[in-house]
Length: 178
Image (cartoon, rainbow, N blue to C red; front, side, top):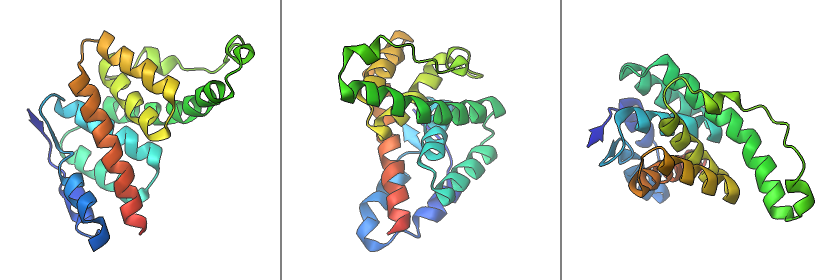
């Protein structure tokens, strides 16, 4: 079981209003996992926060990650996952929703070199990408990254925790706005 320290996130969640009490409690639970390694928790949380774009949440996670000794490579991978999935979730969701075979035959012509050679490891990068795909609601991306996570030796429990963290962070971003 991995547990990371998130004191800045804890301070931020104390600002949530009463209607966001459930998210306040849920945000406190993202710092531990029965299956994820500490680096995976950080990678998923950071990539999700970068993608969501709520500045207070992102700043708190970055500060806590630095205090916990997160590597620069993990931070770079989280940024790369957020930016690449920002592009991919639009493109591949479009192709899926339109449903025309003619679009699937066209080359994407989207550069994604970082996905093949992350600074950390492929399994962790795939967990980050999966979390963002879930936030974006890109069915094809979700299916592709879920399969890749498992091909890299991780389990459905890893997938579940990654998506749980992403969901809580998305809800927390909303909680900070209401």
